[in-house]
Length: 224
Image (cartoon, rainbow, N blue to C red; front, side):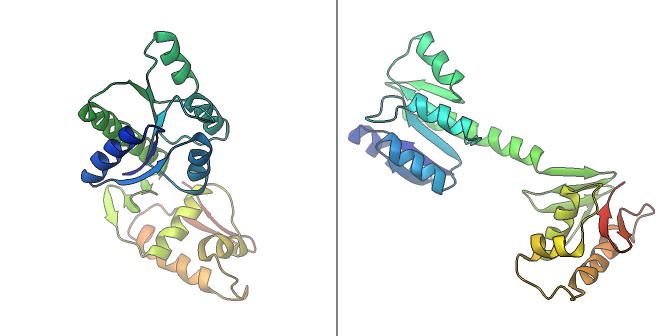
């Protein structure tokens, strides 16, 4: 996991950093709220371990700001304030879990792993697109049709995933070039048509129902 630990107590921060690093996690640290916000804005973390009492922006406010910005990274709050009112405040601000100080590292580690597993499961659900009997997993980059695994190249997968995210919508060749190849192609190139042909051989040809359709003069659409 990629973890961010936000804690202003040096001794505790050192213990947590060492413990999580020894468990083969990639650990980053911040000792104040402002630094933590900048790091979360600039980097991707799997879980944030966030102390409530920080010298500038406190942990509750950081939770509120992240959730208001539609950042839903899993957050576990560390708090010395174990009253129900304080815990409820933290959860209502957007935290996913909490742990009251002092605590055992083993319990914190178990809770962090549980948060990570849950977030991975949710991400996988969000990243799975189903069109008729075709199933595309954007996270695992796997494709199945009628329960059969279909092996695609990286570019074939990216093209299929782009079409699938626009299920039922016609996308032009120019749109496909912009979103799948990410570079300025000669718009007269037939690379899109070539890769559509590759996809059809794998996605449509072995099956009775065709999913990838050409809309003459407009582009392509994938639909049941």
